[in-house]
Image (cartoon, rainbow, N blue to C red; front, side, top):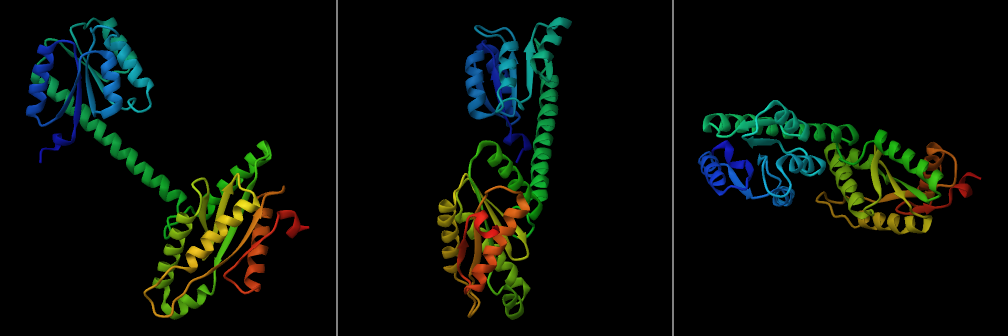
Amino acid sequence: MNENKAFRILIVDDTQKNIHLLGTLLRKENYLINVAYDGESALELANKVLPDLILLDVMMPGIDGYETCKRLKANVRTEPIPVIFLTAKTETKDVVLGFESGAVDFVSKPFSAVVLLARVRTHLKLRRALVELEEKNQVLEQMVISDGLTQLYNHKFIFEILSKELADARRYGDPVSVIMFDLDHFKKVNDVYGHPVGDEVLVKVARTIKDSIRESDLAGRYGGEEFLVVLPKATLADTKVVAEKIRKNIAALTWTQPGLAITISGGATEFNGGNELELIDTADKLLYEAKNNGRNRIAFAPQKEIDG
């Protein structure tokens, strides 16, 4: 398959002859083509189809090419799309105005097909390279904040999230709660079934936690078999509902290994002053209270009650 097949180009020109000429030339190279006859239509169409490149005439009815380009660059969705001006206006001041509007290149009318295609290929290659670089950066950013095994947030990042939420709680007076979970008898799982099964358990439990929390909640692997859930704008009553949902969903999981059953214990508390470590310490104390009372349960208490 021709590598050009994946690229979509938007042609913006008010002259049918120019559009036909450009369309014929570009389709021969297997580019996908969209057409707009004025600036307003171009803005609407570009926002809808998100082309890989725009060929833009300068002199058009309504808003001209310069203004169209400025508006494209002011829209976060269309800002990354490279714009090449096609124009007979090639004086220095016109070229400068075009670049100031956000264009990446100029092609003079009447244009050479060879030159136009060369510039189109060059800017599409640059566009593809930038997109690939951005995707790789996103992967790297995700790796920095994620736990490698479970893909939940890692210890460092979930702690940073908690710090931010507590700062917001102090500033705006909104509630925020946390739940600290720990798998029951997890050492026995590793000893009896082996560490690969233990890893499988952690992954499945992590996925269940993520699927069970509210959209606004954030979950991280705090360490080993411990998980921390941060619940912004959640009272202790709200947190009880979420925590019990997680506990029940994990207890209901089925496993292929004979005799394997997984439960969790947890400690949940609502922020009432102090710092991140004090809040986590409260949740930890409640977690071990749940363990001591038989496991597969959640202990709840306001922060001041357990610390006081």
